[in-house]
Image (spheres, each protein chain N blue to C red):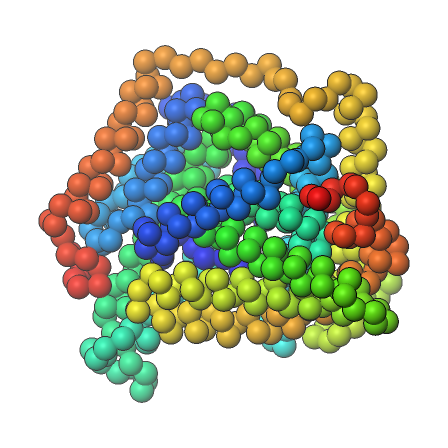
Length: 262
Length: 208
């Protein structure tokens, strides 16, 4: 599981050099627009834009496709459920099961949109250090409390993942084999409880250490943002693409995906 | 369990964000600076614990534990789950950025309902009530999320009616595993470190 989303943040590309404040703001708008698309051709255009952005960002191909594999696994069932269950007369029957093209097109639309959105968010958060992205969020008026908690949570996730792996190793060493039974589930209950108690106690220590170093609810950072004309131009281009997508989608140039492919 | 990008209609997405905003603001009220790192740490424990896969017959399900978040954090379960959902959207991209609102309402709403069920234990005087009410909280947390998910699909359009039914049906085996895990965990915490549980400690981490 690639938890360190920012491991390629050091690469240099037009996206990496983009001021994170503008990047998150502009790509956020683009993502919302993609989520609202209802016609297939526009969804495909959005996917093309997302792929171009991913290429521009210089993120390694394997890193991006690995991230996409999760969303793909989640969406595959839709290609089976939607054509079978679409209300109304089915166009044909396949192995005795109804198959409606409306449902199939809808599943395609959902898939294309989801992949485009996930690509955009990979481009957005994979191209800056995580802490810098979070500070940029704070500049975008995201509440300070939320940003603080996100930074802590992200940091601790790695620590506890380590801890959990250690505990799992020791469970296996003592001969634990997970099965479908109450014993396994109760063991996992105790496992989670142990993890909670350990982390709770660790936090108390860490928090005292932080207080003694003068923590007052905010991290002071040496990160400064600077933006120039190119940052603004990149953001403007993104917003224009977003408006173009919306106009194409709502303008009545294409049919909604449930009615036709185009 | 969460919903992916690209499925729900605009009104449902917007309702998700508005509802999440209101509930997050309400449940974050009177928050002490001291609570920030604690909530964050517990959030990351749950984040990590949800990577545990439990075998169910030939397949496996991962733990959801939103009921347990309610049992441990009380009202603060909602912002904690909000954080978890944001991180999942950013890191994994499953359940993406546009559905953060809906997913938080779904999972966090379940967490709040589970907390309500958990608090009912004060009215009962039975043996092992932490285990019993922990299990009930685990079960209601999961099934409430399933119901909210089904509602989100139903309000999006009639083409999703059948999908909503499947989604709800899938939650039933998960509900049973969650009930046992959360019940065992609540009993464990009661024995080992009761102050971690919501409603068991005087001042820390408690909203009021």
